[in-house]
Image (cartoon, helix red, strand yellow):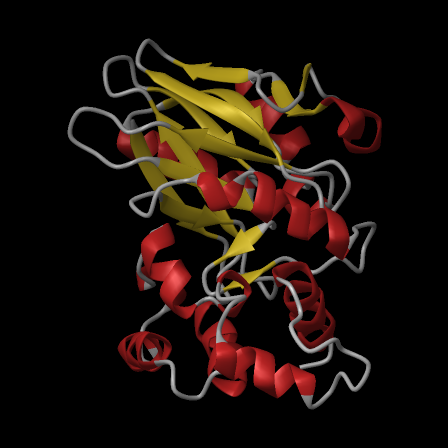
Length: 266
């Protein structure tokens, strides 16, 4: 599996991805908002875009579909329940479905509602000489998670993490839909000032451009992503000061929902 991250250089700080089969050069474009950039990069790499995949229905992820289809004739793949809102979807997908690229790439759809009620992530199992991958759209960001203010539900988002993403191994590389790493690390440090991993990553990334931000894995995320650190006594103590009605020992669901609410206005 070959992966190319394409930076949109837009106010929304979007990432697009090209995923290609190393044997055939056939590729799939993930959330190609800026179709021109994706097409240009595919040409430079000698890849042929054969499929388009949308993680969810928001326009900042689907806005390049029409131009991409016009240029390539590629089918559009997306959550079956989001197809009518996206328009032009050729293949409706559900959790558990498999997406194949060329002869060698297989990705499994994970149903991850929360940011929207119809959101899919793509998970690729480890290959012979590489680690597993997760194309997480707006469900999981580097050091953060997606908001739920445009048709989502934070309770569903928590369930997507507890039931699905939490089960993935530490080695899983994370490819999110937006670049928010430094900003999200600031939130972690606001909630957990003693977090050395978050502070070191923030220092490492402070002078980097979006194109050069590191690709993290879930093991690293579990060290510096506040939403994956729901048992942190420091995070819980800070939230308890804002939650007078909390019971003595809040569970991970309560901590996650409190963090998501707080992050909305942070």
